[in-house]
Length: 268
Image 1 (tube, rainbow, N blue to C red):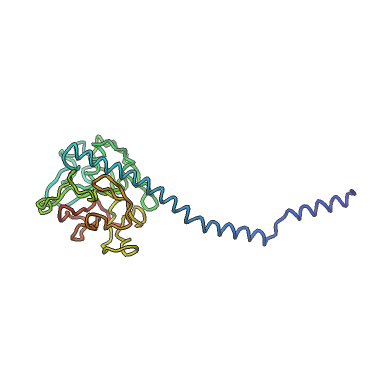
Image 2 (cartoon, one colour):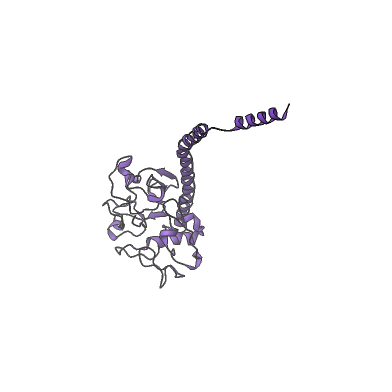
């Protein structure tokens, strides 16, 4: 083969391996379509994994509540004054949750901190693992020397049935103990100032769900120990709204013995 023929063959081979602009655009377009198809699937798998991890945390919290009740004949709470306003996040640095300088009466966050402290739960258990909306961080202080979360909004991703009923609720039998009905909601993803919605399905109730999972729903722990994913807040006894009492109030006492209102809450 003469040099001229060899150079011509090499040139043809170079052109044969090259892509035209049209071919490149077609490949890019195909990749874009595939990504558009796969992205929702990938996000769905990711969200289901978060829900599973969240449910695992809540299952440990629910189990710990039952163990605490077995040992103390009641669910955890710090200082209690019937009818006093509900508060959260007080007395953070006190060593004794029931002593001077400890949480104020009826502190809903302190009740869950007491559970974490008494049952020696890892701080990470108290956080919802889904962090696209809230960037939860574990409580950094030693729970054995503290009485409340340094900042419950950052370190507490769950809410718990109000252990501080007013005198009227206590008078009609409201008490958190192991005698609760099986379908009483004792804990769930955080009550984040849920909107006042009416019972129904789909978008009509989405605004009443926890923000932990972008209002798609929430994991809920029940008195019998089970944890379920529910896409509506109307998932307590007799379709009770777990984020409001039966008078449709948030920061308030339950109304009767089956009225589950999960606290603490914080506005959106």
